[in-house]
Amino acid sequence: MFENLKMTIIRWLGGQYTPPQPKKEEKSAQKPAQEEIHSLWDYLTFRENTQAHHLSSVIGFEELVDMDEIRRRIQEIFHIEYQNERSLYPYLKTLVDIGLFETVDVGGKRKWRKKPVLLRKRQIADEEEAVATATAQQVPARTPLER
Image 1 (cartoon, rainbow, N blue to C red):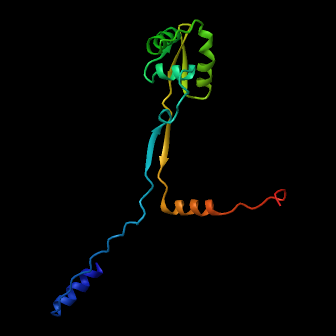
Image 2 (tube, rainbow, N blue to C red):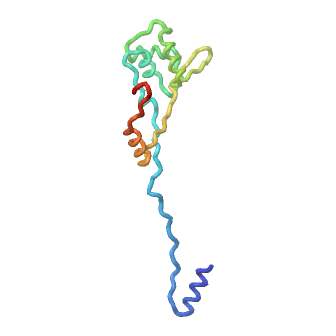
Image 3 (cartoon, helix red, strand yellow):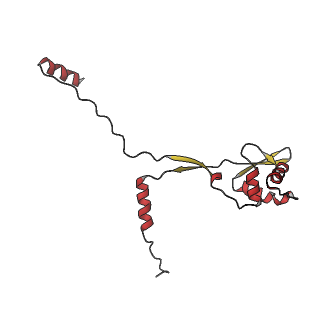
C-alpha cells in the first residue's frame, strides 16, 4: 500500500518510479543428501555348495515354499538330494532367527520365503566427508598400558 502511494505522488510530480522487484530467495547451495534404497540380498553371498546357498537360491520372495518343494528345487537345480530333511532345518531356523526368512505354519506344514530387507543409503554431504577425513587422520591417544 505504501509503495502505491509513493508511486502515485512521484508520478503526479512528473517523475518516473518503478517499484522495486521483490528479491527472490536464494536457494541454499547445499543439496539435501540423496538416499538410495538397496536390498540386503544384493550384498549377501553364501559359500557355494552349502545348505545356506542352496536355500537362498531356491526360495524366493513371492511364494511360501514347503520342505518338499525346497528339496525338489535343490535336486533340480543343483543335482543334490538331501535324504533327511533334518539337515536343512537348522539353516532355515537360523535364517528365520536373523530375520532374512519368514515362516508360516499352514495346515500343519511349515512354509518359508525370503523377507525383503531394505537398506537406506544416503550420500555423504561435503561437510560430513570433511569431518570423517579429519577424524580418520587423527592419531588415537595412547592408553596407560601402551606407554
